[in-house]
Length: 395
Image (cartoon, rainbow, N blue to C red; front, side, top):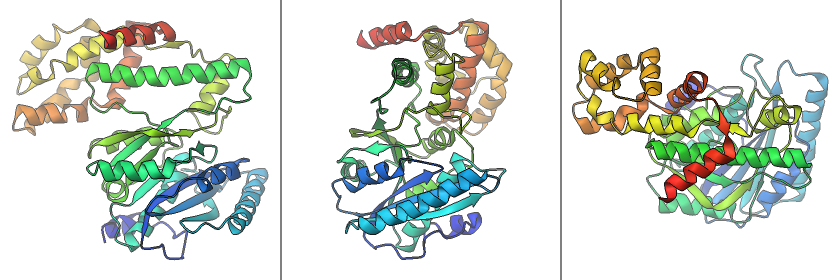
């Protein structure tokens, strides 16, 4: 089967022992840690219009092996509550499962490992029915979905058969928020849109939203990328930015998921921690990366083909004519070494251009932006930067 080697290598414990329906085409994975409103998420899935394929929903209740007594008892109660809900809400075309509480090793416990355990189980199940194009969907336990959610996911992958994955449009829940929290989530969503569009402007080909509750991936592609990482936060960003190197990652805009806008300190970064810092005054969401940093990065990306088969001295001559922010970063980052490696492995300029962004990827772009923010362009007003970018796109 397509995932035999992957499953042997990862050696995860089987979570569900019943066999999947051979017609299963979508498996939704929901990590769940001390979640008070998980049933609302399940109910929104229950209310979905059912696609042609059979659907499974797997809730992975989890905590660290070092979790406190309250967390462990809360999670145990969640399992019982979800089991009760499942027994009362049997649906022919959607099978709901809850597993756990799964105890995660203290060293790795977090969103990444919990999501990985669930997604690996989805791979195991798809592998058992030889469904390499089965769709694994990542959702969160505080997120609601719209009635056409499953239909549109299935439709997208049937229409765009070369897509290895897809992101899903999202909009945070904003009901019953006080004025400051509402302002915070609005600014955060504006920032996410600004950042994605600014990356598009530079010519970076893999600009996409990386939200853990809003993406899907084909089972075979998941295996080829080595599965989900075990990062305690930001696992979605790292996974998707690696996935785009494998093939096209589409955008599903015909439905929407609605993550919570609650405050949280359970992970180092993400929506919850950012909003918590905004509310406490530690984070100013009104400021963002200056658009000039992206403009100058575009000047570099526009000239990327000119670096093909260049010597070190020729490279230095080219970067001397780039904006100072870019030149300084390239020197600080020793980017010549990566370019040299790229040139030694590319027989044509087209291959060089196609692989250029494997070297100057999303991680390096973020490094560049933080560098230019510190040394050249301090953070600027988000609203003004977004307006300027919009005007540039409108020309």
